[in-house]
Image (cartoon, rainbow, N blue to C red):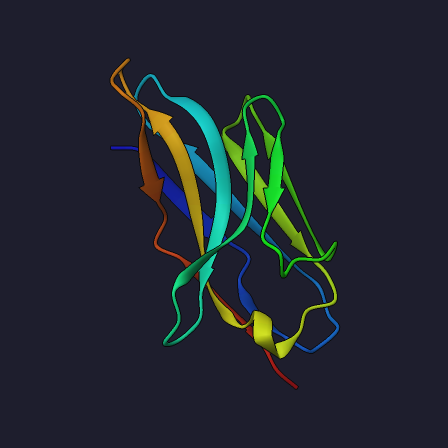
Length: 120
């Protein structure tokens, strides 16, 4: 199975910054897209940002220039730099990848999530 391991969550004050990282691993891995989603308590899981192997980037409407996604295609990692964080950004952030192992069909994979809390 493809494994996604997130790191970098934690507590940050409003207006602060935080950087999340995610690393994908697997056997004969091919990663087509990586990204981040988030889920606040009692709410649905929303797109934060995705980046394809070709470099196409998509952000959720709420990002409004505050977040930047990047990836290292050779290392199968993706980072999410978050700035100007607001209490409404408090959520569990999940790493996501569209990837395949051992030349099988690609599937969508999820990490276990990392908690981001924005509070004074």
